[in-house]
Length: 130
Image 1 (cartoon, rainbow, N blue to C red):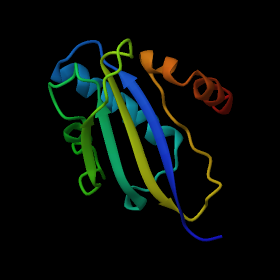
Image 2 (tube, rainbow, N blue to C red; image 1 turned 120 degrees about the horizontal axis):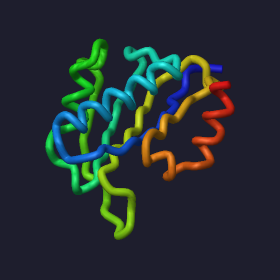
Image 3 (tube, rainbow, N blue to C red; image 1 turned 90 degrees about the vertical axis):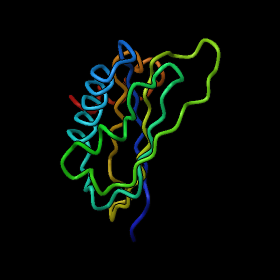
């Protein structure tokens, strides 16, 4: 089998719309992502962060660029479409990466209140980490 593009999803929430709270949540999300996925940053195609409309203190991509090996990754911030009653203060990410192993096991981190967005993946991830 040849190389293939795969994707990782993830999300988290923040306690408030502040630079400090967003920075803490983004670093926690990326720490979790890197700890559980064999991700070579040279193989990352792009990363898109989306935030709910109540978060505008800082761009998550700016925080990601502070991390080692993330400065040359194409990053994009967008505003998540608002749906009445949806989870507030939420940051989501979508990473596309190339891999020579199309069957690679992927861990999709859903943290804090964002665990409720994908309870099926949260349970599957808990089983994988045991």
